[in-house]
Length: 206
Ligand SMILES: [Zn+2]
Image (cartoon, rainbow, N blue to C red; front, side, top):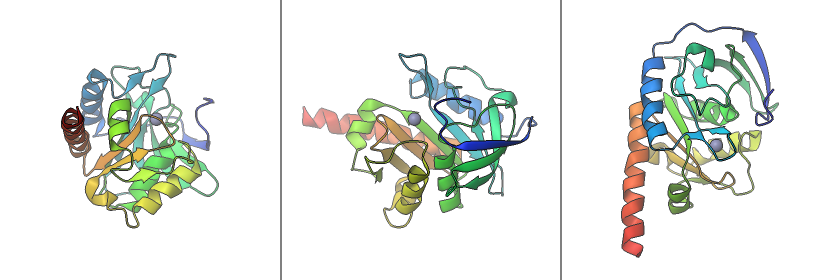
């Protein structure tokens, strides 16, 4: 088990069939990789993860742990999360990969907002710095991949306007940003808009 995955996971089935959203997922990952919003850090650790809701259900497909460096994913690199227990920090999934360390964060968004069908978690220090406390932001005391992060996200949905802004900054996870939307295109577009606006903002400050 990866040392970066902090929850207990139980594999319900060792494989998953190709899913309809996989081509979109790969297309979105290609763009994110080009922009270095997902990839491999200087220590060789993959970062960034994406998920899509399994249409009309509370289940979702998410990229496996440490797949950030792979140019193209197959169903073997993804899992289908079929149950989450936030309190016990536990999830059940199908597939041969290990679910991303941030699966519970994704689950918290799907659970809080029925119209969300895609979530992108990426890293970018400049954007993170610029958005910190300007958009819905999780507490600095809360680390990634913990039940506290899932609860923190659920709390943001209770009144921070996050469902309209569709982006969250993780103060306790340097560089960590989460964007979401009704599909991957919308989540990606939100990220691009925030990047454009934050670069305008930093130019104005010069
Ligand atoms: Zn991260």
